Image (cartoon, rainbow, N blue to C red; front, side, top):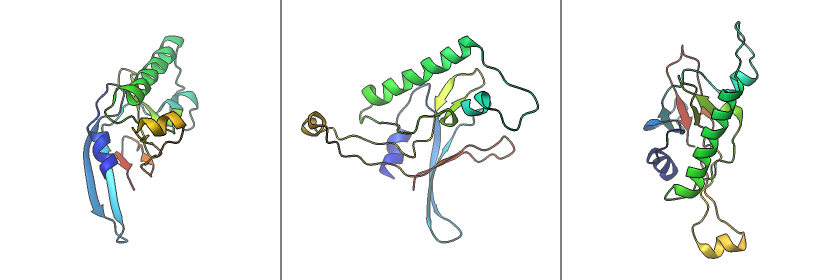
Length: 152
């Protein structure tokens, strides 16, 4: 849960905003931990680049694609260089880039994230110890109001 707390406390305009954290037990008696995050009206970049179930084709013009790439680069720079504890995403792909109403890109799904050791001796030797959050993001359609990010 410490990693969940770390993600809740970081802020950047290109990260999906974490609304709250939940901890409970599921119907099978297993621990259930989740982050609840802001709904992104335009879905994922994956849905725009490779539409599957859409009646109206979606197209991104060159400027939109460039702005999305810049948004993702900005948040990665922030995660790697400006966070109190550096975070390496490790699973960046179009389905993990969500698009807001103004087509601003927001990085999500930190299920494979790593938190490299801050010990300079380990970093310089190339041997970094990592702790990761395990799980998957569930980006639901608008008909489903649950937006969760499992931290198992």
